Amino acid sequence: MAAIVGVHGIGKYNYYVDAGRSAAGAAEAMRRKWDRYLHATLGAESAAYFAEIAYFSHHLHDGKDDDELRSVAATENQAQEVLAGWARNMGLGEHITGALKSVTGWLLDRLDGRSAAFAKLFAPEVAAYLTDQARRESCRQVVADVVRRNRPKVVIAHSLGSVVAYETLWAHPELEIDLLVTLGSPLGMRHVVFERLLPAPINGRGERPKNVGSWVNIADKDDIAAIPPALRESFTGVDAEELVNLDWIDFHTAEKYLGCPALDPYLRPFIA
Image (cartoon, rainbow, N blue to C red; front, top):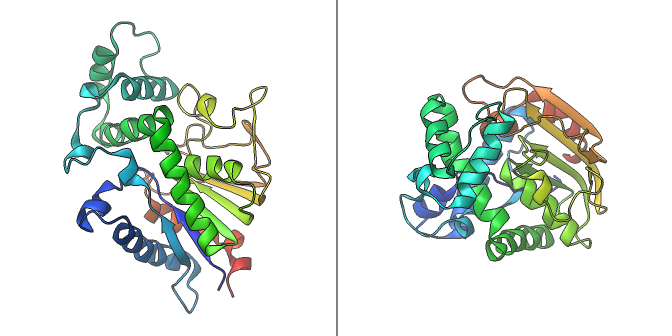
């Protein structure tokens, strides 16, 4: 069976804590879960699909066990800016002016529970990745090392992991893969991610990394991380795109995306 490397998304710091602050332990725990999730879709004789998960969440946190529970309104300005930009994409707060702390507090008070919980994870981690060069390089190095070590044909990247994988593959042209699958990707999110990508988009468009054979993007139509859900309007080289309807409550998890039937035709040629 062809090796697949996974790149996780937001909100996975708990794996690191539960593994006794071991990145390797966190990666292995996540690999076992992702194998189960993908087995629900592919149903092959063996459920060992993933060679390894590139685990980077510990590089985005300051080491506090309650790190994920912090209020966005109390974090640094960068996280507040990410939240404000995300809210604009959601059609919230376009006309609000004033201090970022006040704006973000106002937004969180008005979001429904699922959206507020998502925002409290999304904004600090995205800000940590995009605004702290040392953290950014550490995350990208993790992905590069895992891809180099396993030489996979396929990389499946979820959520913020799609941003890390995209930048890593551009930064390391020697790491050739046949297929990149992005799930619930915020790569095209304006005012938050898109304009900050490395390499920077040219004339308003990004591009598939040269060392990637093909690129498939799958997004739930209601995923509030994948805004916009379609990437073809922002990126050249997206070969296939599937807009799906996973779950109106559980709209962004790796479990739902990896269990999505839309993955089957793209991954089936790589498993034997």
